[in-house]
Image (cartoon, rainbow, N blue to C red; front, side, top):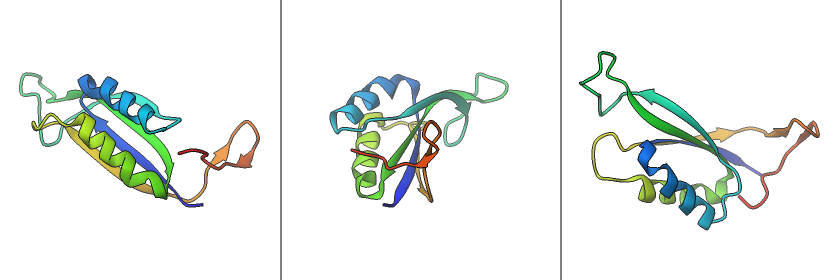
Length: 108
């Protein structure tokens, strides 16, 4: 089976909605990190221009990628600069550390 890593960087205030929508479509596992940076939108009131965001990572079978990306974009969109980005990266293999075996991502 082929997999992708979906990485989304979104506004912190949109995280709860994105999480809820991902659960509704059956995404069983996500990782969330707090990050800061700037791109299209910069915080001109800070010397370093950094803006706090949240980074979401999801490993998914290729067949679910478009659905997951669509849900993230719909739930995270405010229509303003700084809404964030979504990147899709191919994954060669996934291993479970506990069992030391190649994993399948069931239900995702």
